[in-house]
Image (cartoon, rainbow, N blue to C red; front, side, top):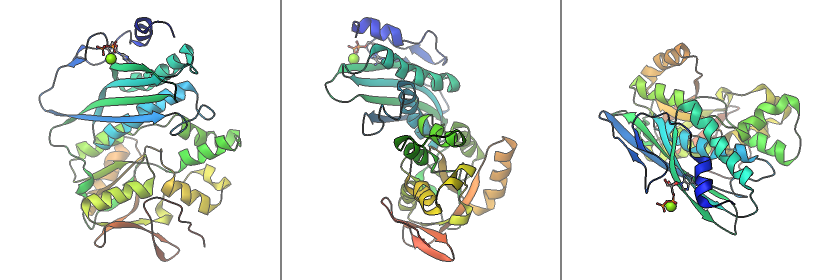
Length: 324
Ligand code: ADP
Ligand code: MG
């Protein structure tokens, strides 16, 4: 690559969105003004080539998009607004400068959509796979906490949209089974959309909500809520939102993707039953989807699936198959 100075210059945003940014890229560290009335949200997620993505199934632009999307999704799951991000990248010479800039363009596409500013990072050389680590900063109004430990027996369990699409898309890409009528699945894998608006609405509702974003699959994320809240989560198979594209696959395959696929970045959460109808109305007024998929009950911390008149335990991860 060209010298480091020129490289940093080439990825420095031409303009910024956030008025609280004092100094972005160019000094020892970024400087941002803190805001009265808000709590700060900070999170970091790292993508490693051939572990979290591969060049066979993702373009550099899509890799950048996803690296930022996973972080925005974590901010969304706290009911926050993303504001800033930093990028640490370990690069080998198997990646061209153009490809690296494409990675930054992928992040910028999403950053512009949400008005988020790139305010710094670090660049190191490696002989190993590409590593992209993104740190995101967001804010949430004081007192609005959408924590995993908030679930209580009697609550409705909800999802902001269908899950399993990303895993289906990955399989299509790996098996080279792309077709025009299945592009939604492939897009879900390559350009996932974090649910910031839904997270904000959930926070603004003021209800006691437990929330998680689906990065590791509905089963694993539901387990996290169940364990943090010490409750049992019952998911109803017939209430899981689906998409027309799933009709091309067996129902066992689809269920496996839904529970264990991950990377859909929808939000799964719980809300008291008495607030459910108003929450549905609030989402409707904002043109957003929200689906009831089950209930929180008393019992051993864990997750089960009600399917075909049977209650089946759902393991956290792994390949439980639901035949019949
Ligand atoms: P320092 O030696 O103070 O850590 P660097 O030379 O590493 O400074 O970085 C100079 C500036 O460029 C800093 O503002 C840093 O945050 C930013 N920067 C460096 N690498 C990246 C990167 N990969 N992405 C975004 N910003 C970067
Ligand atoms: Mg540095």
